Length: 141
Image 1 (cartoon, helix red, strand yellow):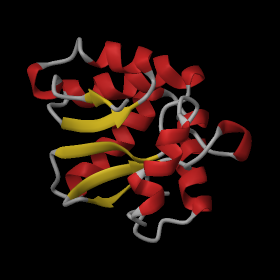
Image 2 (cartoon, one colour):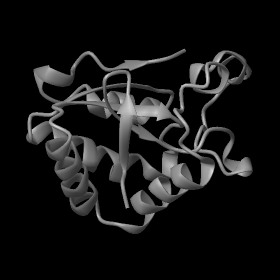
Image 3 (cartoon, one colour):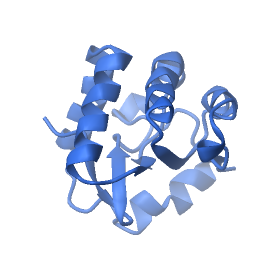
């Protein structure tokens, strides 16, 4: 199973869009997010179906952070890509914050440049403790 797909000339992670109760991962989305989300409105998901995005999310749920990071590193290496975009669609729900950060940290330790936006404030705060390569991560309000 593949976790990463091309996005904006790098590799990106795509989780399901929308509210948790609808099967999405955007727990912290505001009405403005839903109205202006580029993943929703600009059709940038590049043909990645909901079931594929759901399977990617389930992989995160079902596997250890070390295994997720190793799989992602393998895919980045095969794609000859050292820049990675989190949340080309979707976001990190609160119950996955610690696990997700462990994956982010593993990629940071491997010198992968990471970018992306999250509305998960706890994840955003944790990411600011990473290397200088990744301090430009942002939070969309």
